[in-house]
Image 1 (tube, rainbow, N blue to C red):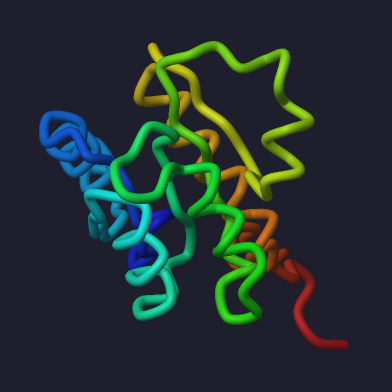
Image 2 (image 1 turned 180 degrees about the vertical axis):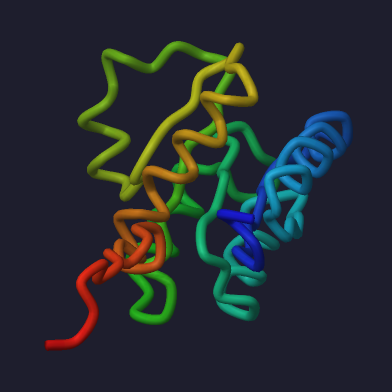
Length: 142
């Protein structure tokens, strides 16, 4: 599978969303772990070093904006791509998303294909050589 063994941290306080993400992303070969608030998300990112993070903006204890700022300010987690998840259309605030450190965004409603495509896009930013199959040498050694 294309995404086998890629670990995703999903930070979302809504149980229904977590179940949906698990079902969808597991089918694509991702391993999925969760955090229910921003503080837990920052802690788990430090501990687990996921390949990417899906971050809801509206979270208890520490919102997604602040959690992402913490992650991007930390040497240990700054390289982890963070995709913003929101039910609000934030097209007018794309520059604010970038300033906060978000590497991608998904606004509801999104299709499963859109979610996987955005995750794949940010993973390619972090691990480009892992996502592109090696070119085969058809002619063999000379």
